[in-house]
Length: 200
Image (cartoon, rainbow, N blue to C red; front, side, top):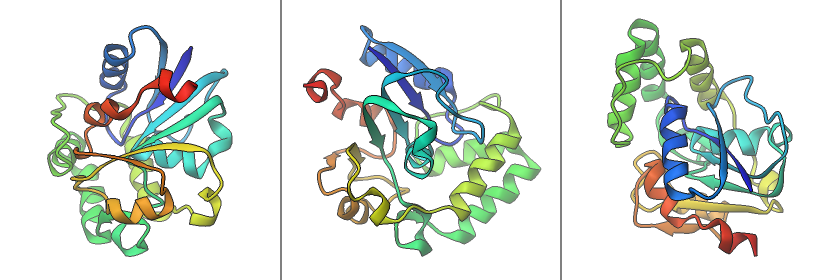
């Protein structure tokens, strides 16, 4: 069984791959960063997105077809608090991050890691700064309507202590979501994912 993983903003693909292999060592894995050109180049049994990666699966599902299903870890329909679609970050704060990225990209990434309590520290950029800037632009400007996801068959996993998301609001759009005692960290959300169980 082959799984495609799409990581969150600025999370190194190597980090995602290592955790995926640790949790699901018997499966085959491929990882894409959440960039403008991210697209599945082959058929995968499952596609799993985390944070911005989950949003890409909702916003552009045609790019990431899955034979068996899609899993969303810490998804949102709109990242900005002002959209009232599940995001908890203000437009002002995101603009600060955009400005920080222009001046000192590595510091901007590590500042985000700290604010999101991801338990990560970067000593190099995870992928090109142009792609990081594109991701922030998507977070500022793109949303997905609840009507567009109402009949989609996604498996959704949320953390009840997520500092970036209004989990109760997201659960309204995904009433069957699994809510864990966790934050936004990729590896913590993985504990709620069991491929054999959801393959039945």
